[in-house]
Image (cartoon, rainbow, N blue to C red; front, top):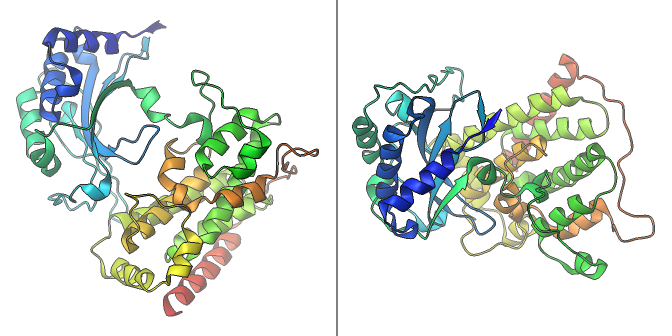
Length: 401
């Protein structure tokens, strides 16, 4: 199988355009990509998507435009790339009106289907998204017009971005490889002394070094970090009013003790994702409004016990905390397969002292904590029903307390 040179062809296109990358506006970048799509020899195998999403890369949380090109040629690997426009922190950007009824900032428009939005179904009336297929007769003018009608693009399409980057898709997806699940051999080795381990307040750096220095089995490491993440989730149950999130935490605890298996854990992650969608897409509902009002009445001491080292720009509003907490549960259950930027995204729920408590001191005579081997069993329907009953009862107490 040959290596694609798609990204090199695009870099050459940018160089020929004669405009410095940093001076491109999102509109300039999109037009340049569309011309590239039309002129490239592999145009019939390409598709282009345009999204507004998190564009954090090794730093503070940033949002912006992501224009991604994928080459659908089964005989080639690599080469897919994204053109990123880092616009700013979420709290610095207005929440755009949502003409499509999805209370969510992300939009996906696909060159291959003339701009049909990619939607995630999250209720009983589940509708699958149409397949994204490139066709040679797609009119790029129609695609551009659809993007220009997008509220985010109307507001910021001609704005100079804080940063413009061309990056390989694989690199962008795994920006936090070595602290959130996978080791990236291309990044520098992290060094840490015992004193630094005991004094550090950077959970991302500590997890990166811990994974890098681990000498045991990968499975034991993953289970140990999931145990830490589960303990983090337990600390924020006052931000988890939906019973489905609470039930999935119990499944995670059962899996660590061998009372649930990988299939059960996968099912729990799917349910937890739905619970997060329930808040994410239900911002205007009465139920979520009641939850926000309840969270707004938490004392500073209660909030302080759940939030670790907040930084300027963190969304600490009741809704922001509810949304982030629900997604943190889902990502914790999915570890180590979750989006790698998760450490940065959810660090406010990940206290360093708890990490040291759970994993131990890797510099001690006995070394770091080791997970004992357990034989997993598959949960029965009765198990699920019992956990649902307990979770619903806890959610009711949360609301009435």
